[in-house]
Length: 459
Image (cartoon, rainbow, N blue to C red):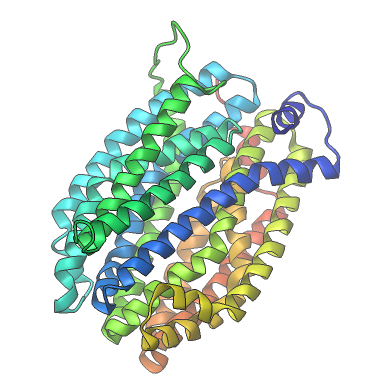
C-alpha cells in the first residue's frame, strides 16, 4: 500500500487527507522504531559503562560531543546525493538515481576516510583541550581513537540507509538498525565486563564499531542485490557527472557546515560544563542520552518528510507538498508535546536505568525537568529541517542553527553556568531550542523554501 500511494503521488493523482496521514505514518513508523532502538542501544551502552563508575561514564561523556561532530560531519556528506535521488525517483528517473547513488558512495567514502585519519591523530589531544580531569583523559582518548577507526563504516551505513529511504523503503534500514542494536548489547557484555574480555571503556567503543560494520554489510548487500529500484543493472556503469556532483555539494555543503557548527557548539558546551566537575559531566552526558529518547523519533519523521517532500516536488506536485509539510509538522509537535510530558514526569526512572550513583541521578533529573518544556518546538525545528532538505533548501537550516546555537545558547550557557551551575547551562539550552523552533516555523509558513525544489532541476 505504501508503494502504491507514493506512485499515486508521482503519477499526479490526488490523495485524501486520510491517505496522506496513512502514507506519513507508514513511512515514519519504521524510522521512528529505528531511532528508538538506537537510543535504547545508547541507554544500554551508557548503563553498562555506568556500572563501572562515574569516572568511566565521564570519560565517554567528555568525548561524546566530539564523536557527534565526526560522525555528523562524515554522514552529512551524503545529504546532497540522497536529496537528488528522491527528486529523480519522484520524476521516475530511476537510472539517474542509481548513478547518483554510486557516485555518492565513492565520494562519501573518500571524505569519511580523511575525517577518520584526522580524528585518530587528534584523539590524544582533544580530551586535554576539553579540560577533562586527569583520571578520565586516558580512557576518553582510547574511546575516541577506537571509534574514529569506524567512522568510514558509519558513513557508509548512514548513506545506505538514506538511499533506501530515498527510494521509499523505510522498513529494511529500520530492521537492520534494530539488529545492530541487539548485536551491540551482546558485544558490550562480552567486551566490557570481566566475564568476557574485560576491556571496559575501550570494549564499549569496539562493540559499537563492530555492530555498525555488521549493519553496513547487510544494507549494502540489500541495496545492490535486492532493491527493486537501486540494485545493480546489467550494462549500467557508473558515469561520473561533474554537474551532478556540483549540485550534490551545493545542497550538501550547508548540511555539512550545519553539522560541524552544531557539533562544535556541543563541544564548546561540554567545555563550559567540564569545569563544574566529574559529577556534572556525567550528569550532563546521562541527561542528553535520556532526553534523546524523547526527540529522536522526530528525526525518524524528518527522514520520512525528506522522502515525501522530495518525491512530491520531483513529481511537480506543489499543492501536495505544502499539504504534506503542514500535516507532518502538526503531527510532530503533538507527538513531542506528549514526549515532553513523559520526560518531565518520568525523568527519575529514566536516569535510574543509566546510573546507580545517587548524586549524578539528582543532578540529571533536575536538568531534564527543565528541558522537557522545550520538546514541542525542538521537534518542530527537527521536522522542518527534514522538510526543507527534501525541497533542497538546506541553507536556511544552517543559518537558523548557527544563530540559535552560537548567538543564543552558548553565550547564555556560559553566563548562567557561572551563577547557577549545570542548571543554568540547561536553562539556556531550553530557551534556545524554543527560539530555534520559532524560526523554523516562521519559514515553513512563509513557503519560500518551496522555490528551491521547484527551480533546481536535474538534467
